[in-house]
Length: 418
Figure (cartoon, rainbow, N blue to C red):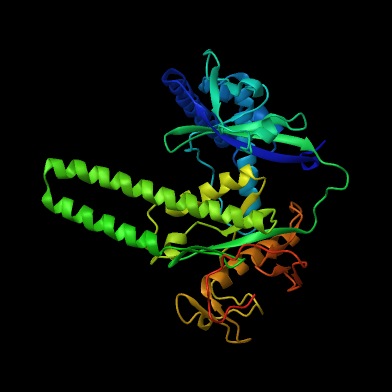
């Protein structure tokens, strides 16, 4: 069976890891990153199939790292996937440079990982001749946690998974799969478009707004306190400054987690298969007035949405942001004058008036679907979600059936159209 013949889900759980085992996992992630980089350096511009990259780079990975044989194979396969992704980006007219590996992650499969559902534990291979790490899965206290529906099921089998280190904790993204039945092919799937903005952290194609107002206010307060402490200049003030900066980072993370949860909830509420953002490359230059972001905020929000969506079986993709801010989502007319102010969109051709970020969110989804129509790697999605119905790239609008009701979440706007 091919990968397309399976349903796939991910159960994300924190791991309880001892200090000794944590040291082993840190060393293993370092070796993994090196192994992937060796494979990419060897295969870049030469080959991209898993078998070819493995044949070309496996010996070098084994010789230059302490990865075991199976993890060396997985590192070659990871490099192949990343090279293939770069080729796809180039075919779509985008720039793509050779991958570099900096994130503390490791891929595991059935040979390098064993799950013990009854004990709520997992065993993970580490580098070199070290023993496996055996860690507890930190699951919800009750059995209502979504992870249990996969761990306790005979239908879902563990498959390739990924270990992540983030926010000073270890998380295992446990992959599960089960075969699809013959009549489960999806050709009319739906996506949710998301635009990142200035006064709004994010706006969805279903007209849900995540305001940056409170976040901007809190950041100004932190900035004022930091300024006062810097003027003081004492050793005690310096220590307090470090504490304040840490609190600010934690507050921003909390807000971004909340926004990410809301975006995923919106996708599930409207029965979407995936979430589409504009590409993040260059976004800080495109949104220089977005006071709510710090250097890492855009990337961190995307990361949070990605892993939260993955746990719900949703994909997350990006698309080219060109003209999404000045293109009319109703008639397709593109003009600089369509956006007379930061938050206002007024089409000079059809007269459509809307919130600019909401208009852009619909365009983000529309551009992605048009690309999908021309792709041989399509996901079977053909429409994007609005609050009142769905739209296809040829402007075909289908209202939701009678009885389809969702919680109202959109921000009031005097002249908003669907």
